[in-house]
Length: 506
Image (cartoon, rainbow, N blue to C red):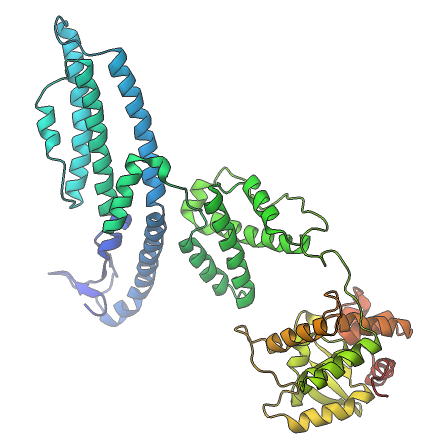
């Protein structure tokens, strides 16, 4: 049945049929899927079968996801059941001691009541065995049948023994059920036995499981999420999951609050953690049926937090410093002394453009264009719509650009050692700049992005109009007139503005 089509004996109608894998038959409640295609023409049946096959495959995949999620929870399930059993055992033991069965002199009605209760216990336990037998489990507790042959207990001691026996038998049945349902290994069976005997030995796992995070990642990627952003969200949720597990805490507002305090991060960073948590929560409440049931009456624990002010790193809440001309000359010379000419050229590009470091590392020979007779950089869109812009090349930078265009071996103006896994070319050279900055004695408030602050400051101080400054560095003006209707300044106007940046030449 390679094409999943069959015809029943004596019928001309075609059916589509798919066997349900054994591992999910109990979840889907079927061993096979079959539907009539209501046609006797095979070519029509070939097309008509496809929606059913797609639906069935999706149901099987979903069932396996549910099973994988359930398997991760077997320890918690056993612990919860065992705690309930312990409570019942304690209650029955207390009852057996306070109200022992009457061995002699008991009335007929009292004996009948004892026998009736014992029969109920017997029926309940044997029902567990029937479930095991139906599921194909082996190694049942044969002595249970022998025990019930003794008749009702006739003393407090025998009543206690009866309660303990039923409890022990129930624990063994529970382990066997878990073994069959989840396919436990020998080491897991030993662990399950320990949990049923000492349920408090189990430490609750985080509800943010590996299986859930895997499904969440697949969802985010299927919706076009940027790989780096998705990775960051997953990493943040993994950290929260570890925290909940290590601290043995449920997922609540207070737990998230304690987690945030333990991170020791700047408020802006903590806000990113909360946004990642909210993204995960919204996904789980919409697409994870088990999660939706568990948290149906709960409020999103990632909202409503008052973040600390000024905590975290030493630079949190502080403005970045700008580079002076002397700072820039010092850094550029230090790069040359280290025989790192690409870094020296990158520093010059930062000084004369105020562009983001990745924007500069993405510049290639085709990025150098001529507009109205003026050579310019054509920056593609990166962070926002306004980031796509054409910026005249500062006159003092033209010789450097000519050299870089001539020397390039891969069309890129700035050669870099490697790109990170997200394709960012600035990864390695950004690290090199950080080391150079530190060696030069500049503070951590001086970052490469500080060149952007420097250029904006210099242009403002040179009386360049605000709208033109924003156009040169790729910021939206916030004005409908400029952002929607205006085509921007001319190349001549922009060159006049950019030329007001101080030259690094002697």
